[in-house]
Amino acid sequence: MRSSRCYLFVFGHMRSYSSLLCHILGSHPQIDGYCETHIKYRTRWDLWRLRSRVVRLTGEPLRGRYVLDKVLHNYPFASSILRNPNTRSIVLLRRPVPTVQSIVNMGLHYSDIGWYRDLDAVANYYEERLATLVVLAEQLRGRVMFVEAEGLLDDTAAVLHSVTRTLELHEPLRADYQRFAHTGERGCGDPSEVISTGRVNKVAREQRTPVVLPPRLSARLQWAYHACAAALRDTCQARAA
Image (cartoon, rainbow, N blue to C red):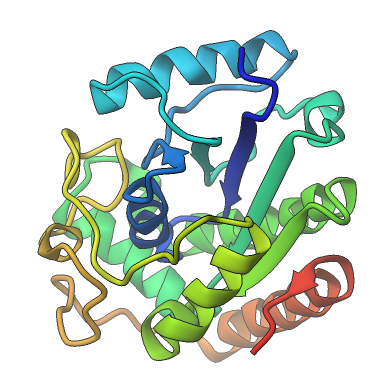
């Protein structure tokens, strides 16, 4: 094992533009991996499982400083791994109303998982996931940065510059990225056609069916979002201009 190799976790929630960010990261020569591996991190040996699974998913040997995994669900995650000095993380957070609408649309158009189409279940997932993101960030204090998901589209250059600097990459991250073996496949990230465009694209849109959130539910989720964002700003290395 290379002594300089680190483990990079993108902690987010579904439909947080995590596939976009991970494709950009995985296209960098110092980063291996681009999608979810669905590993449950109970012991340090699961880091070896990550290495093996990334090799299988990319079809290439490990080449870089970082091995990447994307984690969007509340799987077990050992504190010993989070406290490992070779662990780095990016926490990604998207505003609630478009997130919930996007998850429901994913259930309607791209997935047969029933709870994706259940508004209350999706809202509960979002709230529970945000609470977990705060806990994860606390354990990674000093080795984690917070990225507001909308910035990937609206302020791409600044976000990528900040991530490049935080990860101490030798060359800048780019807004264009490569298509990998499982890009666009269900279970490996964004299943829509948008991810296959190969670059950050503010114009491309996923297939949508109108989804209206009741005002009380919207207000509840807005409160959860603002509480999470405030906690993450306090804990993480906030994105610098």
